[in-house]
Amino acid sequence: MELILKAKDIRVEFTGRDVLDIDEIEVYDYDRIGLVGANGAGKTRMSVWIDENNPEYPVHRVSAQKSLNMPQIVRPTEINAAKEEFLYGMTYTDKEWLYSYGKKSNRWGNAPETFLLNDYEKLMQYLMTEEYEKAIEYRQEHKSGMADFDNITRLEKIQEIWENVILHRKLKISAGKIEVLNHLQDGYYNGSEMSDGERAVFYFIGEVLCAGENSLIIIDEPENHLHKSILPRLWDAVEKEREDCVFLYITHDLEFARSRMQSQIIWVKEFEKENQWQYELLDDADASDGLKLEILGNRQKVLLVEGTQTRSIDKKLYSKLYPEYNVISMESCNAVIQAVKTYGQTGQLHYMKVKGIVDRDRRSDSEVEKLKSQNIFVPKVAEVESLFLLPEVIEAVAQKQDKEHPEEIIRKVKERTIEFLSTHKGSQALLFTQQRCLNYITEQVSTKASTMELYKNNLNNIHTNLNVEEIYTQELSIIDKIISENDFMSALKIINDKGLLSDTKLPNEFGWKKEYYTDYVLKLVSKRDEVGNRLRESMRRYVFEE
Image 1: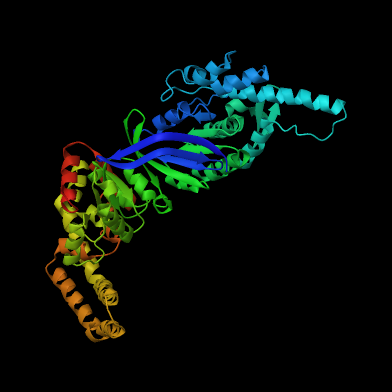
Image 2: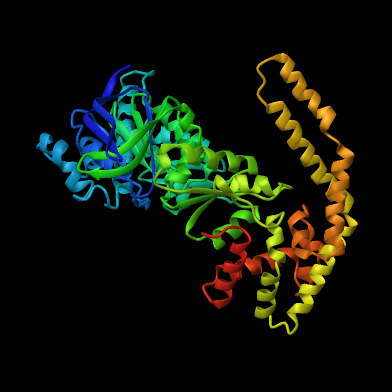
């Protein structure tokens, strides 16, 4: 493979010690590089440094700050002038000066890290000029009798890729303009009227195809303006078209970064001082862990919770209860537990605290305390939905809704909760029995044994010592005691049923559906007024307090 980029004398320090001390780093043909890291870590600054300190290799950089205004009409010019205007922002007779200094002053306005890149018109002019030149060439070759020659233009290649990415549109290349066919309507419209996403796709393809041969192509935020579903289709296509180039992507999307074939992912931690960064080369195992970069990308205290990012109520509520944390959803309680343990042990995260919240899920008090010692907290209720049934919450909602007798609503909720437990005590006792049995079986199976005989004894203990009927009877007795004493808080602690909120008919007391009630509580919790502050303080006591 051909060497296309070399950087020398890279020294990386982290917490006062050398992490990387590289005399030189080499980038080869077909390589893909992903720069990931927090906002402000210095990713763009590093890409500018690469651009400005490798004059022997062509570097074409597309910044995240760019204008996507496609011109309506473009007039062709001289081809070499159009190319230089596109690549360097100007054309000039002194090529050595142009290549060394012209780009910084004209393409980047002497502010390469922050300048709003506005080269869509220059891109289109270069494309249209080539189109014009190729048309002349086509006529000349045919007049001379030449029937077989490569006359494909960059615009034609852009059209092919664009239409394979934007499946519901067609492009038409006209004299001095691009037109778009909408299949849902008759006729064409000017390309300048395309959506942001459609113009972005065209722009990205054009920038890549018009870069110089054997270039290092730097794309800052390749996902900008684009739907996630089309990202692989777009960048796979442009990479295939430019196999002579190396692609360096600056992105917050680790999933996208690791989707690039033959890629090296660099986690940029921090810009130290001139030409020095804290960074780390991530191996394949690291690169598969999207959570790491999501944690590191915020520089906040991190709180891992159960559920999905959009549909579960866990993140919605805990983000408002703990605004000082970056709250990240995990798929399951086991995922939360494992992640907190992992990041609590790694030295990479020594400067930030990672905590977790998981549902009680029939855990014993000793299990809850053990998790707490590992910075994993279990609320004093069985389900996160049960936090919406707390008397303090009901009282706050009633107060905001001007209910005269909130205590009566609370009484009804308590009564219906106990009724629910009484009706379902058998199934609830069985859930606890199953969990206790599972815990005991897991313990015996997992107990280390030096011989087969000892392992067989561990398994025999399951049959000998596990009295299912006795466990079930004990759980029933606990539930019966809660019922007889009308112990509302203990009931919330053991009832594992996400439908409990609806069964108490609490939303009905306000004339609402369940979803409206929970949304209203979330709204109150987010307020910075007396009620919101009191509500957050109350609910945090049932989860964890700093």
